[in-house]
Length: 242
Image 1 (spheres, rainbow, N blue to C red):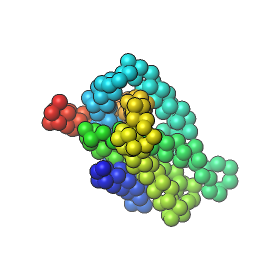
Image 2: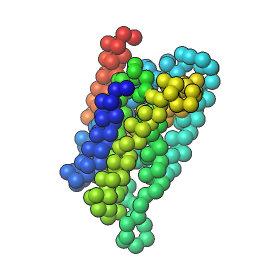
Image 3: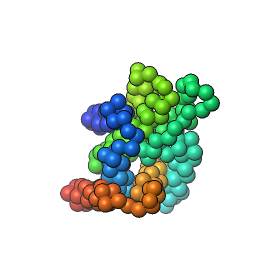
Image 4: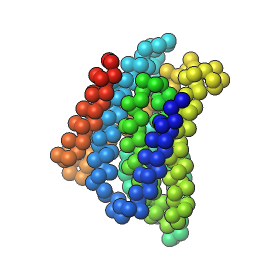
């Protein structure tokens, strides 16, 4: 097992949440560019690697069903997360001025991150680690922003960001056990689980790329970030022996 994957996943998300103390504005241009880059990278990796691999195996004919299930799972999760996994920041003050814990956001965001960590169990999916890690930076930042808006102390804020940050590594560890047959002997279901993750990735990445901005246009910087994300994914694809 490669523990560097766990470290990269955890610390990118955790430090992304910690950045709330350094970047007072919730409209950081840098984070938006990182989000655009990672969205394009995730989409390209999904198309170039995950989908072909999922259809290369036993019972591949029904993988499309699981991709659709994954897509709809993400649609459902967003009813509670309000797009935080896309790096969106929202104000969540309710009646009164006390602290309000965003249970729906926290639970759906953690489940989302847990599922995203699962494809990393395959060694030839190493190129995916950086796209997921980058994608979690603005998500963690958005979560920290919401907690800060709801008057959470720094210690509690870091605790919840840490919980979110550990979810993708836990997904990786579970998937690693399944793919190696060490957990319950259910490795036969690995490709179907990957189909669900593919559906989630397709929803997340396309939403990041194509959701409307304020002026409904791609800025020049966002276009450059998207092109760079696609270029890095293609570079890894062709240098990886494909």
